[in-house]
Length: 369
Image (cartoon, rainbow, N blue to C red; front, side):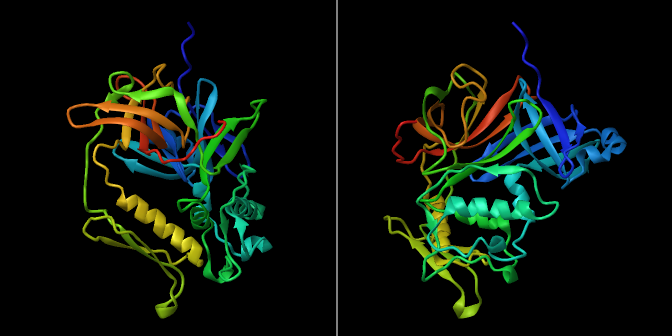
């Protein structure tokens, strides 16, 4: 049997595409993806390596990839390098993190807006097209052609991207995927067919990413290797959320998301000065309330698994529902859980492991998947 090739870390100049390192010696490597976010990578380098070739990890201008078994598993941009004792810590985030450093300087995404009843998926594509149309701003990211029936803007509440408000493009993408009936996205990275270039992709899902998996499971005693924490706190709980948007004083936008559920009322305030549409603001308020209202004893929000036939590494994706069985001294949980993030630790003590972030699966009805 041929031994699997170890994970390899590569770096590339973000602007020129020149390869800077083909086997960067990162220790303590951790990397992973997340739902509606960029995911992250962290690890450590020796100061000697950084001093000898600082451009190989130049923050803000260097792309970094992880290859495992010949396939790219993760890609993103290095954002932070700093001394930590005898090591240099390295932190990176995937493709959507770049939009946090970009703004709509021309307004209306370079003339692609304003928007009335516009598919949110198309707005996301417009944002990326605009960002990458500016000189020295093209990462080569492609966005899925997915369409949805989730729209933004109405004749009475047109969605504008006004240059004088200096709107952050990353925050605008967050607005498009915030709410109970909005698309999902995640970042993905792979080699092209010829293995000569990297495919950088934003995966869009409607009505959601992922599928219900009947071929894999997360199970205590089989592939779950650490007992999950059983925590229940009232600090973050609220069933009444007030979201404040753009504007000042009495003219500031404000939306409420409130339910009565037989519990003592708890309130939370969400400050979103960059949100200039009431429908977007209401969606953010609803999302915040849904999160704060979920304090389900016995649910499992994280498991640490090893690579086994029950759920081989790479067999599951962001958004998938996986049947989860956790039984220990504190927790007894059996049910469908949705994957909202994962972090792989290829150099973990005792062998590679993956920390999978979960939430109770919703009532989404699957079709032919």
